[in-house]
Image (cartoon, rainbow, N blue to C red; front, side):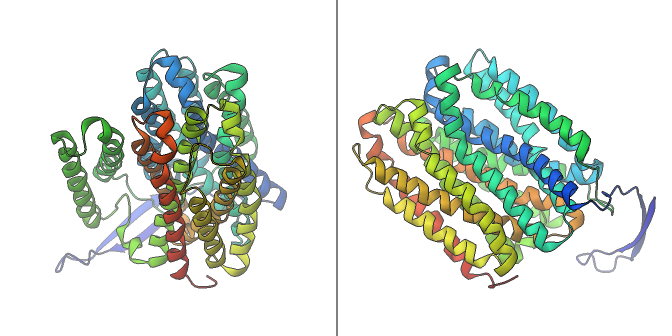
Length: 483
C-alpha cells in the first residue's frame, strides 16, 4: 500500500486555498522480467493486436458477398465496417484509463471475452442489422485490447531503445494484420463463405486468453489514476459518430438536406462543447494541453492520415477489382499481398531506425512511398495494368510500414509512463478514426456508381492517398533528427 500526499491547486481559481489531498493506492507493478519473458509478453500482445487489426480490414474483401447474402447495399456495407471502427475509436481512451486503474491484464482478458463472443454472434447474424449491432459490440471488446496491449508492452520494456524496437515489432504485426486482412478474407471466402470471416476469431481468442494468463503479469498505474470523464466520453462519441455517419449517409440523404445540415451543426457543437468541457475538468478524458506540443499533435494527425490512406486503398481495391473487373474475392485479396509483405518487412526496420536516429527519417520515407503509391493510381482506368496496380499497392505498403513505429513512439513518449494506457489509446483512437473516415470517404466517392464507372469515380480517392503522404512530410519537418 502506498500513501500519496499531493498539493492540489487550480491556476484558474485565484484566491482558492491550497488543499492537501491524501490518497491511498495499491499499485501492482510487473516484476523485473528476463529478456525472454519480456519478448514473450510482446508476442502475446502482438497476437491480440493481430486480431484487432485483422478484423478492421478482413471484412472489406467480403463486402460484396455479405451484400449478396444479407441483401444490403453499399451504405449498409459501409456501416458493417464502420460500426466496428467507430465504437472502437470512441471507447479506446476510456478503456486505457480503466486498464491503468483496475489492472491491464484484467481489462485485456475481459476485452478478449467480449470480442470473441461478439464474433460468434456476427458469424450467425441473420440480418444486416444484427450483423452491424454485433460488429459494434466487437468494437467494445477491441477497445479493451488495443491500448492495453501497448501499455503492457511499454511497462514490460523499461529500456528506451528496447522499447522502440518492441514498438517496431508491435507496429509490424499490427500493420501486417491490417494489410493481410484482405488476403486472409479472400482465402476464407473461397473455401467457407463470408461467415467464416468471424468464425476464425474464436481459436485466436482462446489461445490469447490462455497465453495471457500464463505469461502476462498484472500491472496498473503506480500513482492515483484519473477518474473516468463521462461527459467527455459522451461528447467524443457524438463527435466521432456524427462526423463519420454524415459522410456515410450523405450520398443517400443529400449533402445539403435538412438532416445533413443538422448533423453538421451537431458535430460542430459537440466539438466545441468537448473542447470547453475538457479544458475545464481537473481530470479530463483527453488532456488538450498535450496538443500544444507540435510533435504530439503531429503524431495524432499522422496516425489519422496513415489509416485514412490505408482504408481508402483497401475499400477502393475491393470494389474496383471485384465489381469493375470481375475478379474473385480471393484474387482481389491476393492483389494486396505486396502491400502486406512490404508493411511486414518495413515496420521492424522502421522501429530500429527510430531507436537509432529518431522518428524523422522513417516518416520522410513513409511520406515519400505513400505519396508515390497514390500518384500511381490517379489515372486509374478499367484496364489499368496489373503490374501498375501491384506496384502501387507495394509502395503504399512500404509507406504504411515505415509510418507506424515513429508515430506510435512519438505519442507514447509524450505522456508519463503511469498513463501508458491512455498514451496508447490516443494514437489508437486516431488510427481507428482514420479507418472509419477512410471507409466513409471512399464509400462516398463510389456510392451509386455503376461498375463501369468505378475506376473514374475512385480517382479522387487516390489523390487523397497521395495527400496523406504529403501530410507525413509536413509532420517530419517539425521533428528533430533525433529525439
